[in-house]
Every structure is written in C-alpha cells, then in structure tokens.
Length: 220
Image (tube, rainbow, N blue to C red; front, side):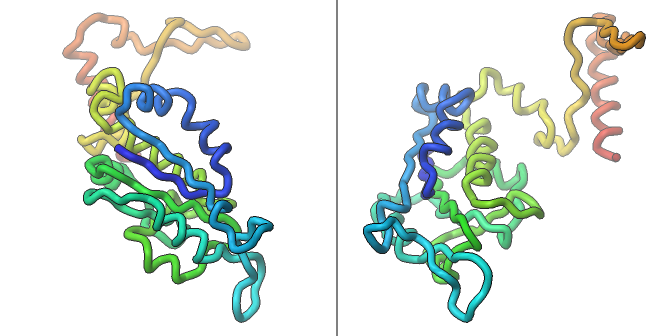
C-alpha cells in the first residue's frame, strides 16, 4: 500500500507515522508513506497557499493551485483514490476501511483554514469526514484513516485474530471486555476483581461469556 499525504505540516505527520505499528509496517515494506509539502507549490515566494474567499466571509480558503500542482507530480497507480478530508464528506467507518485496504495507493489532501476552493473537488475521487465535529485541519483525519487501513493489511499486525476479535470486527459486534493482571486491584478500600469465569480455564464457557458480553455491549 502506498500512502501520499498532501499537507503544510509534513513533520507533524511524520512524528506520528514514524512510531508504533506504522513504523514497523514501513520497515517491513508493507506500506510506503510519502509526504508532500503543499508550500513547495505556493503561489508566491512567501509560501502563500490560501486567500480570502470571494464574496466575503470569515477566514482563509485553501487555494486550488498548490493542491492540483502537487497532485500532478504524483504518479498514480490504477487501483488508487484521491481523498479530500472534509467535514462535508461521508463518515469514515470500518466497512470503508476494509474497502480501502484493497487499494494499491491512497492520496490524502489535508486542507487547513476554512476548507478548500470548491474547484479542488473536480480533482479528487472521494470526500471523507471522520465524524460530526470540526477540526483545525485534515491532517488528523488522514492519520486516523491511514491507521485504520494499515492494520487491515495482511502482515501488519502480529496475528490475524488480533483484528478479527476487535471492536467493529466482521461480526458486527463490539469487542468483549478484556482483563489482565492483577486478579484483584485494590484502590481506596475497594476491590476490583476479574470475573471468575475468565480464571476458570473452561474455554467453552469463557467463549460463551465473551459472546454474551459482546451482544450486550452492542445493544447498548
């Protein structure tokens, strides 16, 4: 999988993608991440990538030229998509993550300010939001989407079961509660215990308990 990130903060994104699972996936050459600084295609020597909106209004709008010029420099693969992060887009979910994990290349356009010039949308394939709230830019959204896709790529996680069992898995049920040591956690004169069934060693009963818990959590 090849990811491309169009941003004015490549170092900020790199500080996240160079850690944890994404770092390991890159080292294994299961994913490749490239960063494109939109200011490299600024409209003047001052690095300008935004301008006030025509017709008046609050804030600045990301200009079309830096984005389109940067996209033109990326060699696209056949099985690819250009994604604009936007509060107006369709909401990201696990079903979309599975669909996108089958692609060979994803190019993320991460705007700032008051969004992008509407003409940018003529050069993209999808417009996606990560939720019904507003962020200061699309960079965080791109990281969320990239993370959720990468973990579905075979070989990225240690075991296939790791993502099959987790919340929003293929079953449609939320993940059951998990516990680890200590068996009894004491805090402010109270004891917080692990459910006895998980300590019993009866795997069939444990599996039954987990399915029941998953069902109850999903119904809430």
